[in-house]
Image 1 (cartoon, rainbow, N blue to C red):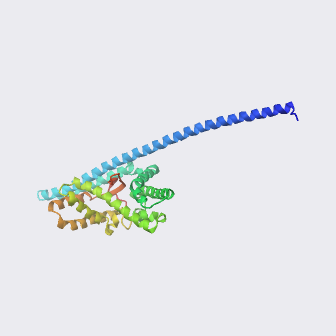
Image 2: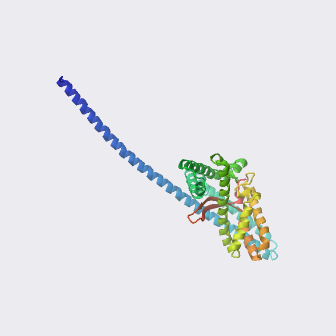
Image 3: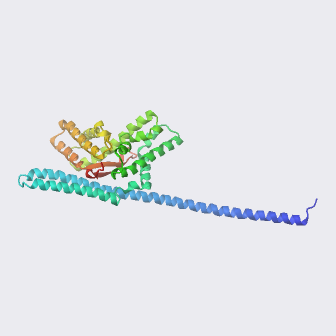
Length: 344
C-alpha cells in the first residue's frame, strides 16, 4: 500500500515540528539548568556572607562585653581600695565615711548605666536576632555536647535528631536570656528555662532515664569547668599568694560551694526564678567557702581570697559559650552584668 503524497508531506511536517519542539525544550531545559546553577551559587554566597556577618557581630558583642567586664572589675577594685583607704582616713576626717558612701553609690550607678547602655546599643541585642542566636546555639552544641553524643551510640538519623533537639533548646534559651535580662519573664518561666535541670527536663522525651542522668552529670561538669576558668582568671588579677596546688584546692572548694544545693547548683536563677536571689546565694556560697578555707590558708592567701570575693560583689557572670578544644581545655565567652540591673 502506497502512501499518498499529501500524507507523506503531512507526516514529514509533524516529524519536523516534533523535532523542533524537542530542540526548543532541550534548549530551554539547558538554560534553566544554567540559571538554577547560578541561583544555587548565589544562595551559597549569601549563606556564607550571612554566616560571616553573624560571626563578625558576635565578635563585636564579645568585645563590647569584654569592655563592660573590665569596667565592672575596675569598679569592684575601686570599692575594695576604698574600704582600705577608709580605715586609714576615717579618724583624720569625720566626714570621710559619708563621702566614701557617696562615691560607692556613684560607682554602682555608673555600672547600672553601663548595662542599660549595653542593652540599647548592642550588648544584649544579639539575643533578639534569631540568626545570631541560632548560630550561637549551633556553635555551642557542636563544641560542648558532641563528646556526650558519642557516648550514646546513635545511628546517623538519631544523631541528627538529637543534635537538632539540643540546638533548638539552646537557641530558645539564648532568646529567652534576652527576655530574662529585660525583665519580661515570670518567675515560673525563668525557673523552667534557666533552672539547674532545664536542659534535661526539656530534652527528656529524646532520652532514656539513664541517658538523662548522664546528660545532667555531663552538663554540670561542663558548667563547673567554665566557672573554674572564669574565677581562675580573676584570682590572677587580685594577687599571687594563691597559686599552683593551693589554687587548685581553693578553686575546688569554691566550685563545690557554688554548685551546691544551697546555691541551686549554680543556676542563673534561684529556685524561685529570681536572678537577685541567685546573686545573693552566690555571695553566701563565697562566705561558706571562706569558712572552709580559713584553717588551711595563710593570712596573705586569705586576703587574696577576700579580694576575689569582693570582685564578685555587684556583678553576675553569664556564660554564653563553653566549648572544649582539641587539647581538652575549655574555651569560653561570658558576659558580666551589674547586680543593680537585675530584673527580679
